[in-house]
Image (cartoon, rainbow, N blue to C red; front, side, top):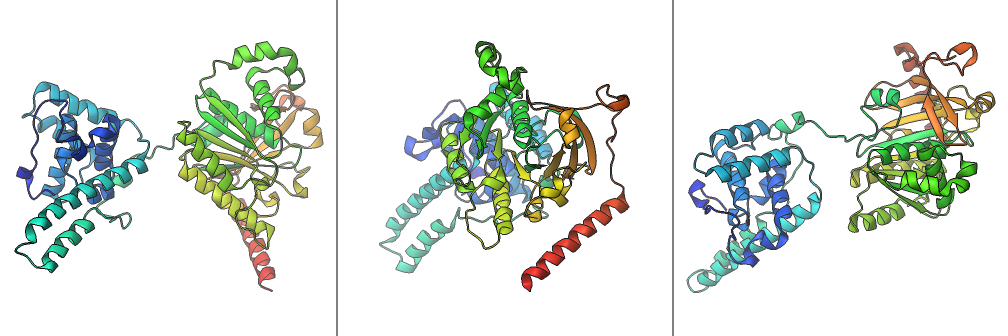
Length: 481
C-alpha cells in the first residue's frame, strides 16, 4: 500500500489512535501490536505477505509506527529485509527527527524484542492478516462504487480481484539468498536439564524445545523412575511439567515426585505428609499428572489435552509420556512395529507443535534383561522409532547391580554432541535417587568404577552401524517375500 516513502504519514505524540477503532489494531491491545511489529521485523516471508495490505496507520502506538516505518523504508530502498545489525545502525543514526522520548521508546522496544521469544505467533499472524485484508477489500469496494457510472464491469471486477489477491499466502519456503541472514541467527533450543551435569555437558545443556528424548530400559530397570527424575529437575528450573502415565496411577507417580524432591523413602512418604508438603509447596515450577488406562490414549488424545491446557494459560515446559509403547496408535496397522514407529513420529510432531521437549521411554527385548550395556539393538519391536528421536540413552542394571544400587547409562544417540558413552550410576529406587558416579567411587569394588566413560572409536561405530543396516535390510526382504 506504499507507493513511496511520502505515503507514510504519522503524527508525533503517544498514545494516539490511527483512526476510528474499527480501522486500527486498537481493540487487540498493546501486546498484540508489539508482537505484530516484532514479526514484521523477524519473519521475512510474513513481512512480504502483510506489507501488501498493511497500513502504518493501523497501529495505535507511535513508537511502533516509527519502528515499522524504518523496516518498510529499508525494504523499499534496498529490496531486501534488514538484518539485526542494519536495524541497530538505523536506530542509532536515523532517529534525529524524533524527540528524545520517542527515540528512547523505539530503542527500548527493539532491545526488548531482541531478547525475547514471541508467543502466540500463529494467532497474531492470522488475526493481523485477516484484519488488513478486510480493510484493503473495503477500500476496493468503495472505489468500485465510484467506478459504477463510468467504467466497465471488467474494470470493476479487476479492482476487486486485485484486492483479494493482496496479502494472500506467499511463503514458498526458505529463500537461500533473501533469507541469508536468518541462518546466522542463533537458534534458541531452551534446553531443560537432565539433572546430570555430565550428560548435559555433551548434550548442549539438556533436551531442547521441539526435541524428542527416549529412555531405553528392560522391564523392572526403572524407566518410570528415570522419567520422574527428569521431571523433577525441570520443576526445579521453574518449568511446567505435564506427566502422562499409561501404566501407573497418578497418585503413585505423585508419590515418586514427593520422594525424589524431598529424599524421604517411598515406603515412609505417608508418615511425612506435613514435611513433604512444606518442602514442595514453594516449588518454582508446576506439575500436572494425567492418567490414562493402557492403550486407551493416542497422540491425538494428548494433543487435545495439551490444547485445553494452553487455552487455560498453562504452557508446557516439558512433556513426559510414560511410556510411548503403551499409547494407542492413531492408525491401526498390520505390523505392530509400524504402529510403534508412527507413534514415535507423532510424539516428535507434538514436541514441535507445542515447542517444548518430550521425554518418553521404550522397552528392550529379552536380550536386554541382564546386559551390561544396553544399545539400540535391544529396543523392543521397532528399531525404526529410534530414527526420529534426538537423544536416546539406556539404563542397564544387572541383578548384581540392583543389589548394590548401581547401574549404567549408555548414550546411544545424540544429535547435539558425541554418543557411544557409558556412565556408571548410583540408583536407589526406594527414594528415586539417581546420580552419575565419579571415576573413583568408594561404593564400587576396589574404589574404582569398572567401566569408565568411553567413546567408541570410528571403526567400532562403523561396524555397529553396518550391523544395524544389514539387519534392517534383512527384515525388509522378509516383508517383501
